[in-house]
Length: 434
Image (cartoon, rainbow, N blue to C red; front, side, top):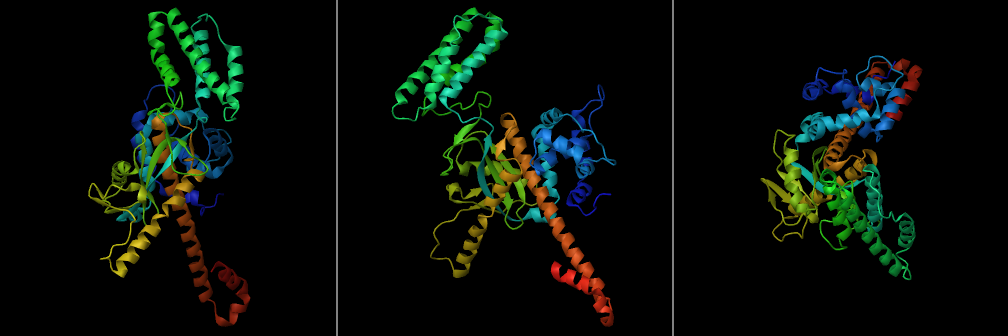
């Protein structure tokens, strides 16, 4: 009863699902409860990024949408949930970055020769992490609450909890931008850091050796956060996502973004993403080229010859035999033809900006909800794979549209001239299609 011309059904029939069964079979054992089908879990991961849904929503929509069920390998409609939403978390952790690479490689392979262009476009963006805006006050109050939680779990009686005092300091920190309240806000921040130190010392005095060893890293982290200054390098902005860093991209509406830097490599003409790379440290754009281009070359049979970049990549002219092209002032020795070719080339470079916009708005790259740096890598790979699959589906609709026009034209040509008045509606339909 489903529409066989739906692009999701066409995509489901085109993907070679057997490769995932072979690749991911090693992550499962024959003992215990039978596992969910690998095609079901991979299909849910693809649909999640393709439709910009959370783990909870993609499972719910699967129950309601028969097209989703067909995509995941079901032959009959099922009115029940396919799995618990947390199963997607376990599956992502199980396959890791290598499994996400398999899905991304499949999305590139579907485009065939179009992904083998000699010239590519490279740019970087920020994959923001799902954290609150970091301030010293928020971090200090969070650390104090976590210390209270540790004391409760270990059944340690603190000399003082400072609960009432913390509430007063929180109110003072709310208006720290007001000129008349800066002094009180600074004093409140200083006192919160002092309270953090007092609680840590109180706990360490009352803990045994085993407890101290268990919480040693936590206490060292809290002391490091309490002692860090405004202009320190390698600052910690989140207690649960310690690897993130502040990135200034020169945006008027957003001075700093907190997450990790991500590189995108796209073919020049067809606009297919053939390589991505997440960067654990905040390095200059020119130093991110090697990782991004190396990853792009792993999904091709022919190596990249030329990478077109913006002026933020100054300092590199060649990486692993790939020529790096950056816009600059025209040379006197260039002919008119050469100048025009350069102008067109760097004009085309801007095509990667809307691609990054679609990755963020449509495929869950704007805010990453997956934990750790491995979560950054997995989310980036799946978002790029979803973009490639969406491009394939759009192209399928275009080809289907052309096929309908050709088929209708062929039918109308075969009609005799004296009988064409009877088929005026078909002629009108063809005119509208054109």
